[in-house]
Length: 251
Image (cartoon, rainbow, N blue to C red; front, side):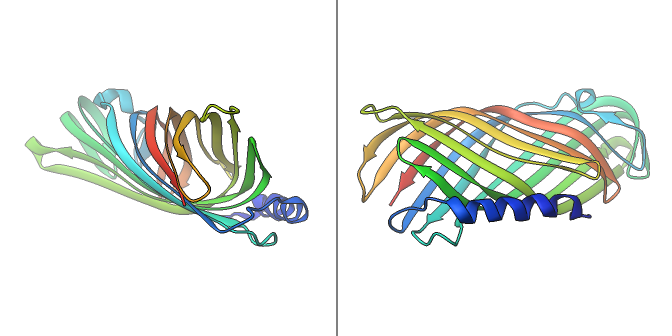
């Protein structure tokens, strides 16, 4: 995949952040784990005609995710956040479609498995009751789409993977003296026919909030939009969306 169209914007962003970042005063670790109840929608193809997810009646799936962030007081170096999650959806439909060089006619099972690793390098632009971060998210995706028809022993499978550098931003507003907050976080990339948008909005509450340790909860809504243009012969315009909840900790 050619990443040249985004390289200038990424270097410009890094230069701006290096000149005006406000890093943490001490070394800190933030961690979280949660669940995402998401619904798969859209269409996809691989060496055949366009296939709609609605043909297979994909159901909602509840998937887990984890993240770990390291913040430090060195202004020139970005902070680091790692996040991992997996979307695994399945459905069944009575279809007549071509996929992965095979023809399927009748009752067919479909599965999509998408693993995501986000490597986020960011700077704190504000760090008080308004928290603002900006940087780059290298999203590593590893996906598979499989169609299987048991009565004819017909199976077609397509794999796709890529590492995509995305613009990243996050904002959180702490409501004074309440322990409550509202926030948003997102990553975006569009180039060469591909488009990825991954964003969430949430509300949070800190049960424990001291300099040494914090414990809280967040609830919100997340949507991942994935448009692929001939990535390993896979074309897709799909989304995963739904409510989410997670625990948060800081040390």
